[in-house]
Length: 156
Figure 1: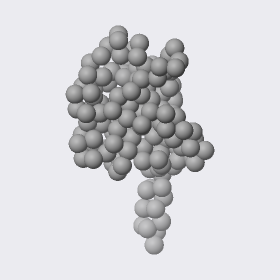
Figure 2: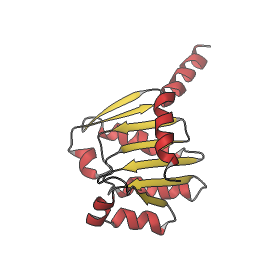
Figure 3: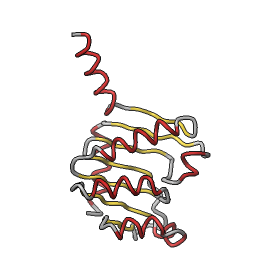
Figure 4: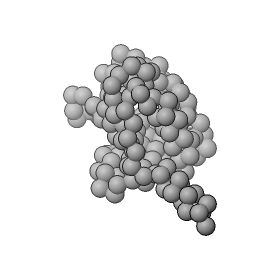
């Protein structure tokens, strides 16, 4: 019985609220983010101001080839400065979109399977993982998920 309770607590902790502070928690965050992306079942929505980290792009490409619908919202000016990941995603049939109604799309959020929200100050860059002081919050809070779904609805 103790093993079952421990297992339930462990599994529950995988989707419960969790906070990572970078760069101290960089490896833990990379592992957790990769785990969540690779275990997505139906869809992933990402809004990311600066996205140049190929490892995350490759994880997205992998799951998209297994039927997970991916939408990535990027800032147009950042893509104009560095289009490598944008081109990689587009060439692998990932839906990449831009927000044209604002000067700067500065969100840093992820919604996975309408059940996990990830928000924070971190961009998807190697520098963010290795050097910057950033914070990332994983949550299954219904209010937060609802807000991210509202944002996503504009970019399907």
